[in-house]
Every structure is written in C-alpha cells, then in structure tokens.
Image (cartoon, rainbow, N blue to C red; front, side, top):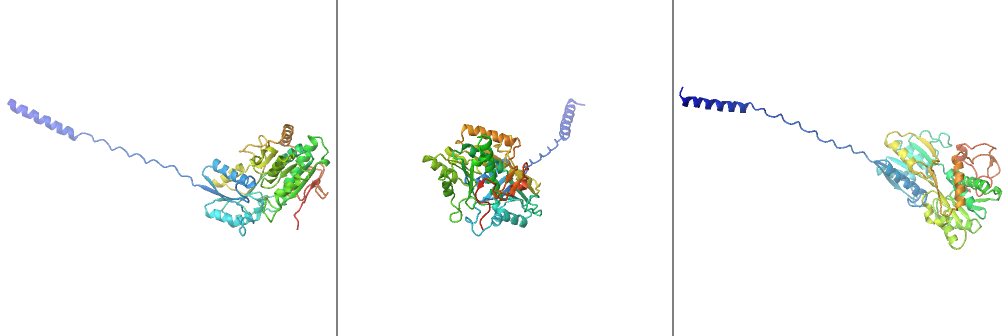
Length: 415
C-alpha cells in the first residue's frame, strides 16, 4: 500500500472515531425542579367586642375594662378589640346592651364582653339568642351553680368578677389609720348586692384597723354611706356626687371612700385641702386614679381585668370554651402583679409612713388567712347575720341583704 493511501486511511479512521465519540457523549440529566416555598399559614384574626357602661376613658371602672382589653391584644396573638361605650339609659336612650352587642357581632366580633352588673338581664338575653357566640359578663351570677339566678342553659356564658372585697378592706383600713375625726364617708353608687357587700367590706377593714392597730374603741368610729343612684353622675337622675362629697367634708368627715366609677371624691378633697382643710380620699376601680390629685390620695383599690379576659378569650380562640363562674382574688405573693392579680391596691402619696406600715401588716394578715367576714356579725336592723365564730360562705357575702350593724346609711332602694 502506498504511503498516500495509508495516510488517507488513518485520517478517515481518526475522523470516524471523533464522530463516534461525540455521539456517545452523555447528556446530563435535567436538574429536579426545587419545590416552591410554602407560605406560612395566616392566622385568622380573633375580634372580640366590649360593651362598657361608661366612657372608655373615665379614669375609673370602664377605663379599667378598656385597659383589660388592650392587655389581651398585647398578650394573646391575633386578637383585636372593638367596643361601644357609654351604654346606659342616659347616654343611649332607647337602646339595650344586647342590641349594641348585636352591632359588634355585625362588625366581626366573635366574642362579646358585657362589663357591668347593670347589664345582667341584657347579657343573658343576648347569650340565649346567640348560642354560638361566647359571652363574658363581668359580674353577674347567671352561670354560678350556687347563685340565685343560675341559668344552666347559658352554656356560652362566663361570669367573672374580682374579689374587690379585699381591696375595699384595704381601703377601709387606710381610711381608719388616717382619719383625725373618726368619721369616714362612703360615696356609694346604686344599691344592690354588690354595692352593699363592698361598702360593708370597707367598714370591716376600717373597724379592724381602728381597733387592732390604733387600739381605739370600734364604737367610736363613724362610717356613713350615701348613695347617688347610679355608677356615675347623670344630671337630673342621680344625686350630684360632687355635692355629696362636699357634704361629707363639710360635716367633719375627713376621709371619703368612693364606690362610684368616677373621681369626684378625690377632686373635692383636693379643693378642700387647698383651702386649708385636712381632707383625704380613696378613689376606686382604676389603678391610675390617684393621679387626679396625688396630694390627698391615700391609695386606690383597683380591678385588673386583663389576666381573666386573656384566659377566657384564649379558650374561646382555641375552641375550648365552657361555661364558668370565677370570682378571682388577689395574688397574695404580689397583689399588684399585672399578670396574675385580679385585684390590687396602690398606696397613695398622702398615706403616712406609720399608716403605710400598718396597712402592710393588715395585707399580710389577709394573705395569711385573716377573714373579717366572720361572726358575730349582725345586719343593720340588728338581726343576726353570722353567729359567733361562723365564717360567711361565698353566697352569704355575695348576696348581703343589708348593710352591717354599725354602718349608717340606706340598706335597700326606696320604693
């Protein structure tokens, strides 16, 4: 074979090998497509509605509830409050709390809070008409098995209340440790079971501290209750709380305890003090109430609704709702713990150092089991209430039928 032929054959073989190699090249397998990222599930918003008897910013009872709702928004994820305030016959004539609650449901509320004992019948009406809507009634006894108004069919209702009896005992003690005249006035709202037992609790605390810390005869302590007719002033309907407070201060009562939702007693004490009278007051309901006039404020017993509202709204949100009655007391480890104590007492700037020390002793005694709802105790008309050594049951305290012997003032509403 000639060299030319050999060279040509080799060249053809090389080209053929290159073509064959190219044909056998492995094509890379397609890369598996990445899974699309899963968007986190969006939690459905839980809207709760609140029906308040007074203004949401009243520096008293309704503002304490409003702050309880804001606490829930902060502590329970995915919650939002809507509300209607000034729900009373003077501010909203012709409407009922139940009707206004229906409006909140129409706005998206999945749970309704009624914040006043004055709304008991309307709350029960709404709960019966809306069995799928959880209802919290602050106060009331409709789902208390031991209560006089127990309605077992209201399976969507919860009654909650703070044991303000303890807070009022502390307030009464502070008043007794401060008064120079031995005369304490109590500015009361309307007359019912709740207001009687709270006024009586203040009296029991005052009498105990007067006798046990000051060593004085309890018979020498004067304690008078004057009722205005509602939780706050309604011109033309109630007595004027400003005038009632002034009447106390002008009649030698140097300390006035408030049982109403607003701060007239504190305001009037400040006016009297600025004119040279030594006068003091103890407001009610709202932890910041002393700020209205710190110079004459001995302290304030207040409700902390947030923890109980958070508890039951969480249960509703998680589908674990059940009817319940809860009468929550102070957390004796720290009565002012915002996360655990339903009732607290903040001392005021006007409370003396000695009085403060004795008040601390009294609070420690209560924490240790001291009960002032113990016989012998008579009702205002002299009839027996608790026999010697008898401790009152919860229903006996809740449904106190009269003021106690030693208290001055009306026990039942006028006809």
